[in-house]
Image (tube, rainbow, N blue to C red; front, top):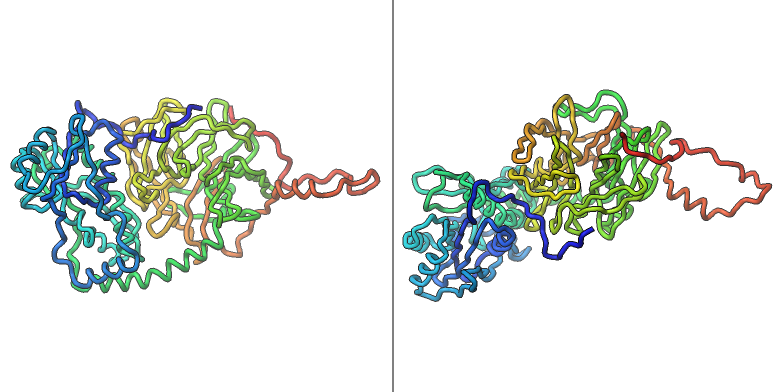
Length: 594
């Protein structure tokens, strides 16, 4: 396998369709800028379809948000004293950008003519200005190019992001982070948006989560501009703003503080309860399969690990064998998991042992057969990659054969073959943002790749249905993508989406239903659903009801260790007689279906 350089990264965005040259963008701002501006500079460096020049101007100053209610100012001051300044808006030096082969020096006070000259020399298609409205307007008039002035709602280190407070006050589970262009006498133009989880326990933490998305949202907006998607709707001079919400009432800060006080005990109670209990598997064996349009758990049995817990179950049929590949967490406090294999039979279940173990945390083991071989992908975000494994001795021995995505923190990757193409679905943390919020898609002609960004990627930007919850499957003539609703909390429910269109350049889906596994009040969520043959399996977080029957588990590793420690019987010892086979039947090698 080819070694990967430390700086190599799989791109997340396809080049703009129809663009014949790079989009030239010049960004002008004060010597000290918010941290997201530097993060944006870093994201742009990975793409050759955009040329970014950054200029520091001493006369520029970050605009401030006006009209903030006193109660909101008090809330933010309290949180800043308690938590400290948020990292996303920390003032940092303006990054330098290339101008020809040289690095531009900052313009000095009163050196506006020199600044205009250097902007003109870069021949920008777009000028992005961080500064006061009057200064930005005068600069745009002299440079004679399209100009986006960044609004104070995205720059003020203390009071930026106030529209994000609205969902907290309304107790909504998800909060939109949307960039819009606003020009006088024109309707706002939405450039890019992403829905994230509402942080009911802290406004500043919610703002920090949202502003981590800002560099990527701006990059996506520029990609749309480069391929002409904005068309005549894009004004020549406009303000780049955070999508406004309803005006804040004078007592908004007090209401938000009361909301934080209510939410904090609930969050702590649920966290401690689920940290102790962990995940349990739910098996549906036989009967009518679950209907993605109206799902219900129905008749089921429970399967629990002898030690620790099992999660992310994937089921495969290997000739007559029914095998579960699971994330196995033996010591939750260590935060390290392996991939284990469990065999189901009429008599119970047998834990066969570890199928894959690496230095970091592994999960989401998608196992499938292709051209006479067994393959597997797993979540290995700890190593910033998505890798393909092939079985050398199915089901417990695997070898890593190819890295499909490199240099990216990806979670819950899932492969799907459709009409001659391979599609890789993966949730990616693009700028250290939440891995539950955005789903990216890659496409290849062969299983082993190379995989390139799908032109429609990211295909879902919504914490309520972005993160994968299992492999794609067919049901009643429809292709279904199971996803997680992580708005109320991680893995709160499984959401079923119907894929309406899947091709090398197009993707469309619609949400069908939501499966919330409220078997009892102590069950807080589920986040994986998979099916093969007559076996359906999902996992639930919390403590299932006592009345439900559990499937007995024989731990093959523990039994082997016990036999190894036992003294060897003498020739006349009755214990030397052959032992009866376990209830789930003898193990035998599996082979992929032909």
